Image (tube, rainbow, N blue to C red):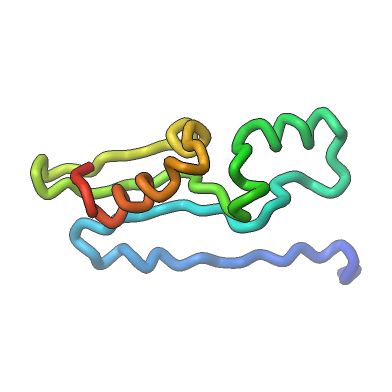
Length: 102
């Protein structure tokens, strides 16, 4: 096999599989969220999806939080993550750590 054509994969393990009510959060790390060979249109679309990324260096993509009050999970999807202004990030992280109710 040609080593230049080899694809490297990272196999992830589900570390939460034994937990009863795991909270899960999805971050993308890094200020650049587009392929280096992307067109200028694609780069602009990526930049407008999550403007705080250039300042913070990360994106909060989504999360799943267990509510003790309701006994169920509350899911926050990518639209939630994209809706966050830079000043809202701390509140979203507080929600994940249940400093206030989900």
